[in-house]
Amino acid sequence: MKILVTGINGQVGWELLRQGPLHDCRIIGFAHNTLDITDSQAVSRELENNSPDLVINCGAYTAVDKAEAEEKKAWAVNRDGPAWLAASCAREHIPLIHLSTDYVFNGLASKPYTETSATAPLGVYGKSKAAGEEEVRAKLSNHLIIRTSWVYGIHGQNFVKTILRLVQEKEELKVVDDQWGCPTFAGDLALALLTMAKKIHTGQTNCWGTYHCCGATAVTWCAFATFILDLARKIHPVKVRNIIPITSEEYPTTAPRPKYSVLDCQKVYSVFGIRLPALSTSLDAFFAEQGK
Ligand SMILES: NC(=O)c1ccc[n+]([C@@H]2O[C@H](COP(=O)([O-])OP(=O)(O)OC[C@H]3O[C@@H](n4cnc5c(N)ncnc54)[C@H](OP(=O)(O)O)[C@@H]3O)[C@@H](O)[C@H]2O)c1
Image 1 (cartoon, rainbow, N blue to C red):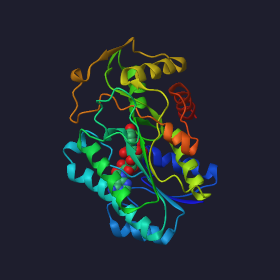
Image 2 (image 1 turned 90 degrees about the vertical axis):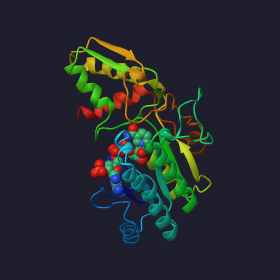
Image 3 (image 1 turned 180 degrees about the horizontal axis):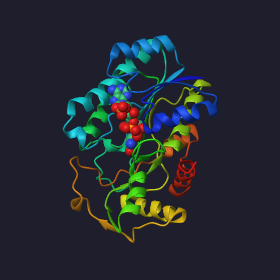
Image 4 (image 1 turned 180 degrees about the vertical axis):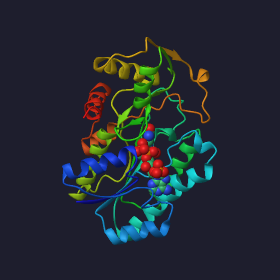
């Protein structure tokens, strides 16, 4: 099958480009500089010219703190971009898989969020992503909105790479221990997206709507850092002696973060049979790929 993917220089887009051919999928990939999803004419032209079987939108404005100052840009990419894609897909009768985020929630829950939980984003990034979801729902019935969380990939910058660098540079690390979420390996998510795409292509049509799809282990950032450190130690000596848990108040950020954004992924398992691995399994896979 032929899949058009936007944002292929990002963590998830890059994995789709890498894994697609391994799963009989031809990926027509566009980076930001070859297809800007905020350019409505370019979006409809590329969909028309390439006639893909399905589109996966990995293009997004993901700088959570910077979005507070660059509000206009965040809304253009995260709300208007998906709107143009969904409208073009509707015209061409092409299904769309659109990626969204756990940051559409305010984090005040005490049990995992389901797809029907009320959204209440805290910052510009989450608000613009929630608005993007609404645009997709309004413009195209044949869509999947896939909310994921705390993504780390081989390609691009992320928390795992930052911790791997810091454990070599510092004797002591202070890491936030009161925000909970589910780290998601971009490689696992890409495979899940390709599985969904293929099921749609081979006739699964009773599946349209919103899904949660993230790694199977809920942790705090501090616990996540400890997992990474334990694996890093097995590979080479590290400088760090201690990881010290701190509160969000001790590590202020420009944009507020949800304290608890654990996603319930039962629906994606029931409908597609997809369950992402536990954190230790995915981190092993990340280290194995990274070491190649
Ligand atoms: N990263 C996370 O922790 C996380 C968590 C939850 C959900 N998500 C969601 O998962 C999806 C993929 O995330 P990711 O981690 O792969 O993000 P990423 O690494 O930041 O990649 C996003 C890509 O989108 C591109 N982009 C930006 N503006 C664009 C535009 N106007 N048109 C086309 N492409 C554009 C960026 O290119 P430039 O860099 O060249 O601008 C970048 O390559 C996003 O929808 C994100 O909201 C991510």
